[in-house]
Image (cartoon, rainbow, N blue to C red; front, side, top):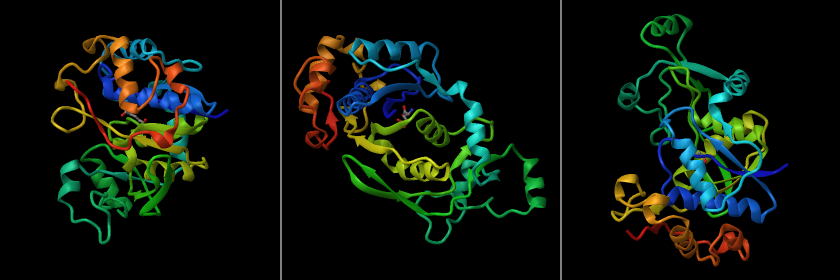
Length: 283
Ligand code: GLU
């Protein structure tokens, strides 16, 4: 089985930018004969009731998905198993400590400086008393290259990414890779704010023996101030904008597609013809 997916975090209502990305993920999957899966990324940032409203809105704009909705909160066993197969080390750094540590020579901007990478067992023992340890990947590369439908070959930094946080929560970067591999997802369509995460995720996939997915990082939707659309920008949810009969034509127009339903938009869908610039939502 090959599949695409949409993987929202249930942190609030979906806005038009999220709906546009979901529509694109569906179009990419369906136009290539793939299954389309829905995965709720509820390891953190969960708002009561948001998941149900998100699923309702996705169905209301005409998206359908295969099989049951998968929730990350029920998959800790899979993440633990993956973690046990990776070379990891304990990290006791706070965010502040990381920011103030001198960066390692030649390390990419923002990379973890490696403070806890080579501690002795005695040092670890002492630091464990300060706070619960996060687990970081002992990466053996500094960069990795992925193939992207819209960005071509993209090379980005890989550092010792956190795989499990100090509070025991599995990190998004681990969960997303484990789930995509376990679910047969070989096509990842999502907002291009995550493009820079793709190299570390593809690297993690390779360490777990999984083939990297084919990526398509699609342009963001911007609010009136020229930055990524946010709830506070005003009328941005499906209901606030007047429902599917208003939003679907708006999304189709912004993508240069014909049709007023996703099924109609499939006709003539061509990734190569998609706009590569962000779309500013008229408000
Ligand atoms: N759950 C992530 C988000 O809502 C998306 C992750 C992904 O598509 O890989 O931003």
